[in-house]
Length: 374
Image 1 (tube, rainbow, N blue to C red):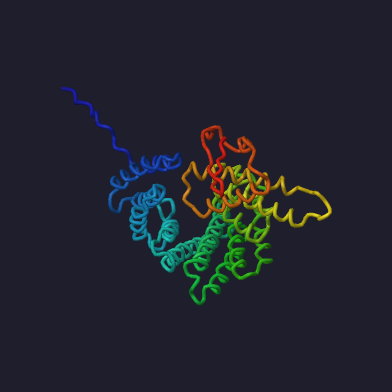
Image 2 (spheres, one colour):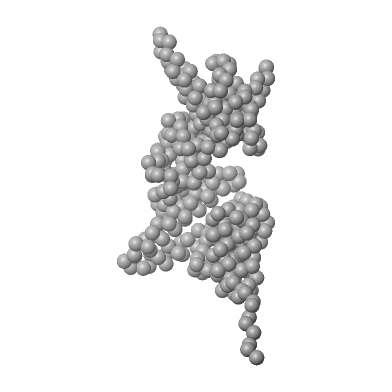
């Protein structure tokens, strides 16, 4: 009698499951990625070759899913397996888990600082190991540059904690100064470094130095294509626009904001900041116009500001945006413009909207409730 053939399907390896999970994450299929990674963790078992990598990935995936407690659970398990972060990143080692736990800390403050410092210590050890190699290859030099940029970012993150959660500490300003000084030495090629320097200088009322730092950071990326890795992340550039507005660098702020809405035309905050920037520009033009002329250039600037604000408020309503102060200020600016220019002409804002917004309306409350419709 001939032996029967096995009809069972060969179980997939943990490594294969993790590769597929990472692919699912890249396409935004977070639930599928969690299921695959959980399967990989169960398959590799306690002490298995892929356990650390699976734990790290589950931490990242649960952050993406907004499940913060679950994310912290898996990341803390990963820390127990790699306490100094010096296992190879290929198997899940490295500083990432420490840095994520710093951001996810429910306590913030000193607890966040402790996690950031563990991540920074790992990056310093990695840089020392790379620096010990003579005649570094191109790949090694690229790794050095990447880790220097990351370390600079961690130092800046700690400085931000001391400017916010720990600003009450007696040595907060001294610590901020020390951190940004080290960041400038380690990662002068990073726009984030100079943005944090500017933030510290603003808090110290050293506005001229803040402006110089902002210009230096802008010069690193403003002429690069969007896909260049040196271009800061979208939220970082939104923060930059706010700093530029705060330091009255309006032309630079508007350039940053125009690029932001080009990259993501659904950003309520970018449209709001652009409208606010143009509103201030128009105010300045109006105040400094020659009293002997009838130059009404500020009218055109405010008309453009109103279009930005209209788009902001339409998105605000459609996306059920939660920042009430932003919405209230946008409405206030919009109403101030209408008092000077009259109501926005019917359909003037249409060119600023996507085709799927034709049925939306914007209600702006003032003394006489006015409603603008597409």
